Length: 107
Image (cartoon, rainbow, N blue to C red; front, side):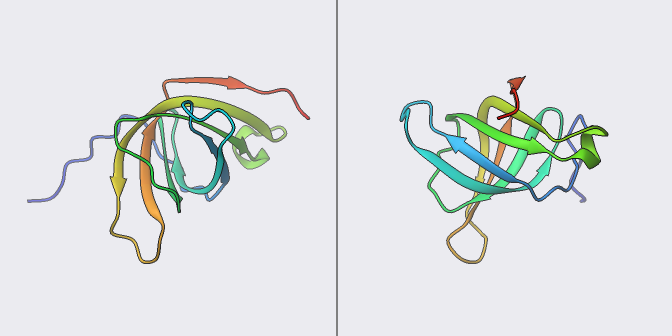
């Protein structure tokens, strides 16, 4: 029996750099690469151990192709909903919700 799609919003297959920050470890930042992004969630690949159910904060830059203006940096807060360990090499596939976001000023 085929799997039923449960996503409520369209995912965009974007390979963007993303910076993750563990709210518990204030100074530690981890870089990752997105697989896809939607208005409510993100999927990315990372070489660091991330625990399902944990809170997460991440920053990514949406390119002009998406914003239809200029690049926009967005800081998001959410929760890890799935961790997939079945990828070749040391990378994990991580799916997380986007519960809150804010646009950041240009640097």
